[in-house]
Image 1 (cartoon, rainbow, N blue to C red):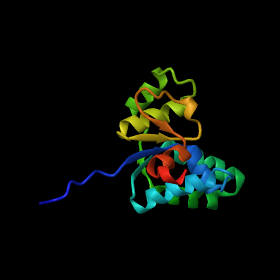
Image 2: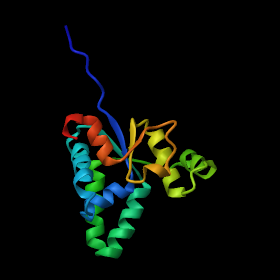
Image 3: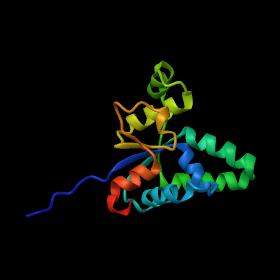
Image 4: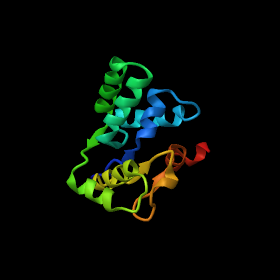
Length: 148
């Protein structure tokens, strides 16, 4: 008799969490790094929007240099599956009531990837009726409630 296997959890990671890890931003680094490690080890299926590559490259290059920005992109590419901002996602983002266009692309990318959660530090910027929006700390507490 076989055991029932559960598909791995599917999460979508907002750009701000990537930057928390890459820039080691306190006090956000620790939780974001735990989530990144989950993505790297396959503990979950982790997705990011393709626009995160543009945003991270621009920010890291400005703060450091082009070589550091390229290293950041390689780390992202090797850890996360990317969701292309295709015509459907762009149309949904343009037509949505989400005030920030970049957030709208992130949200519809997460829906397109059929993720279980969208993880962000800006949870209030997203609608919660369709997809659970969690901060990194909320997500980690959900996985391990006794560690609160």
